[in-house]
Length: 470
Image (cartoon, rainbow, N blue to C red; front, side, top):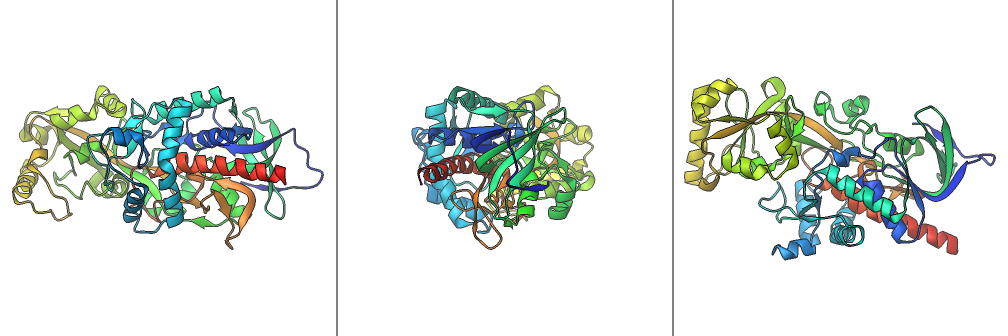
C-alpha cells in the first residue's frame, strides 16, 4: 500500500481526533474504549457489513481472574495465564506484552459485559490445549458472529461513528513519521481524505495475500485459507513502508479440523474429550492434544492432505453445544457407524489397521503409558460404538505476526523509538504466539484483538487528551 507524504497544501474533507481502521472486534473495542475516555473516533470498515476474522471464529476470549470463573469455582491468575502462553510459544513472545494482556484481560471482559451488555459466560467441560485453567469466555451460541453482533450493538448504543464500504487506501504521513490522515475509497471509486490526530490500525493480518503467505509461511502456502478475504496485509505493508519494526511474521493460527467439503470448523473439543484423528491408512499420526494450530500442517502432510476425526456418541452429544458443529451435523458432515467393520467399509479404511489402532488405545489406557507421540489415554475416554467420523483438512485461519508495539499499543520503529501517534492491535500487531505455527495458544487471536484493542483505544485517548491540555 502506498504512503502519501503530507504537505502543507494538503486538504482534508473532514477531521476527527482519532481514526480507527477496521471494524472487527479489535476496532470496535478500541472505539468503545476511546469513547469511555472521552475521545471521539470514527471507525472505517472496507466491507458493507463488519465481520472480519472475528465472525469466522468461535468468539472465545481467554481471561484470567474473572467473576465468571469465580462463580464456577475456577481459581486463575494473570501470572498463571502468562505462564501458559509463554510455555506454548517457547518463551518467544515479548513478556511485557504477555503480562499486559493477561493482567488486563479480566477487566476488559467484565467491562464489556457490564457497560456494553456482551452476554459472556465461561466455557466449561474441557481444557483447550495448553491451558491449565478453564478461562475461555464466550457468548451463548459460541460463535464469533454472535460476538460481533453484540459489539456492533454496543458501538451503536455508544454513539460511535462507523463508516462501512470505506476502504482505506493511503496513509498521509510526514517525514517525521507522524500520521496526519487517511484516504478512503468508496465502492464507486470515489475518494475522501480524512484528517486525524492519531491512528489505530486494527485492520488485518496477511492470510488472504498468497504472495505474503508464500514468503512468510511456506509450509502453509498450499493450505486452504479459511479467514476473511480482507486480510491482505495492509497494516504490514504500510508499516514496512514507514520503517516500522516487524516481528514474528512466521507466526500464524492454523487449524487441523476443517470439515470437507463443507468448510465448517469442527471444534477441537472433539479431540480434547477423547477423539482421535486417523489418516487414510487407518492410523493415528500425531498427539491430538498438542494444539490445533500446528495440527494443520500435520493433517496436510497426510495422504491426500486430509484426515478423519473419529469420536463417539458421548463426544457427539457434548459437541452439539457448539453452533458450528450443529451446522456441520445438519449439513451431513458427521457420519455414523455401528462397528469398526462398518466404519472401515464406509470410510474405505484398512480394517486390520483400524483394529490395531483401537487395540493400541485400549492397551495404553490399561497401562497408563504414553504413545509414540506423547499422548495418554484414560479408560473413561476410550471410544465406544456407535462411532462418528468427519472428513477434515488443515487450514490457515489468520496470521499472528505484524507491527511491533509496546504495552500501550504504540508502534515501534526499527531503531526502537516510537511513532508519534500510530497505534496497532489485533491482526495488525505482533501477537503473543511466538514465531511459528506451534506457539498459538487457543484464544490468542481474540486476546490480542479485544484486550490490546481496548488498550489501544484507551492509550490513544489519553495521549490526545494530554496533547490538547498541553
